[in-house]
Length: 588
Image 1: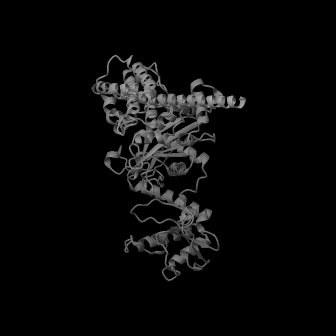
Image 2: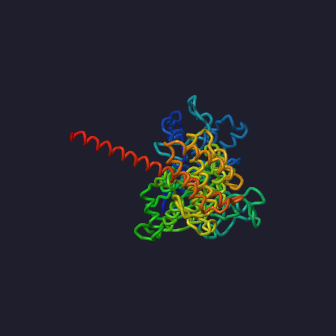
Image 3: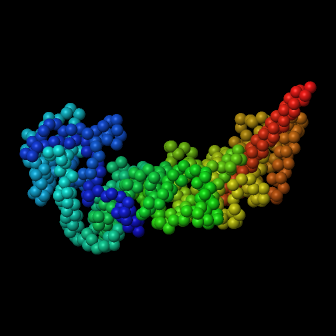
């Protein structure tokens, strides 16, 4: 299914290169006349000031995947193959064989195409090394070189492109037959046709975080444990030449696209549709705008067609990561654009949470939620399962694994506190698993009707912390700094001591006229939280620890908002008295 959809994308949405051609940097161009004589030293097309051209101008040129075997590329290859000039890494005894293979391939192409330009290159190669022009001191034999005859590049000739396609098709058939016929005619997983299957696919997949810079294989088996039915290499998933090129071109284009790829940690997600739709999930996931999110949430809540912008167009998402030299498919989503938008709306609704100051919260991008599961995402990127779970819920509607809840709770305990990102992640997971909360919806702000003991214990810790802070004028080490981890996992072991310690703090506040009102307000708040709490739980389960964190966060946010509103009310009162005094003075 994945191969088929990638092939369809390549055919419908991409301008595919000719078979066995790839856009690649070509640093040097060597001009020849019709007799194969060089017209000067190779022209260096590299531009150090342009990142895209730092290794040479990019052109469509013949391509072949090679490892340790000698495989020349037609008419455009490194200086090692094209000119027989070794680099420091090359074995000197091997270089003549590489250059001879390159020259033989060009001669074969010249005989098959009868193109004068190709014949000129073949004549030049026959005259090496005598015909080799003087080279600049900084000439790099490891860079790609091609030829130009009478102002035209032979690699651009239709006859040359047709020869290269036929040559590689014949080469794959021969290789299959040499392997005992295992790769002869098999049903291709991309097109469903009976075609010659490739042992090794022609294109490497590039752009996956943590993967090899040279690219990786999507389909390949290099050990008996990965083989099946006696099929080795890429024959484990039979793919024909055209489909292998199509999916490789499609994946590389999607990974390189600014709007079609999304990376968090060492996981890459790609998105595509077979027809233009204007839907840009990458932007919504990476930098959500509040107004757009409100529309998505409204669509998810009410099902309004206008708000949802229902679109029956097919939508696909693929999650990828790297494992050595191979690509790991982590997730696959096959849905419609309209359904993906509705799921995004629900995703934002589940994570909706007030800001730490109690104001309406801005929607959080996926990368901030994922990074909330690790101490330092720059040194320790979020696990692939975390990213997979977030994207799977956002676009596929699949409830995330409880690993996300565990990771967020663990970081809260380790850092003795609750950030908005971790509270939002906890709320999102609990909301996606309603069975964990007994079917009760998790609120985005303080829920005074929530009588869950774990939620109340979280609120209680926030109130006790506020009492200590007010009494001791923001001490360096608070009860949250010392006891959050214990209170969040074993409340009964610590809250008796904390309540006992709050009594002298309240007494101190009551004795001072400037803080007497605050003491009474804090005492009432403490009583309100304790009233429905029959007993402190001995231990809290993982979901209950999540509710504890939310209760703590909600109470703090509500307290900060209330304090801000009281200050604003006092300022309005003082401003009103000042205005009244000014009016009285003017009357006198």
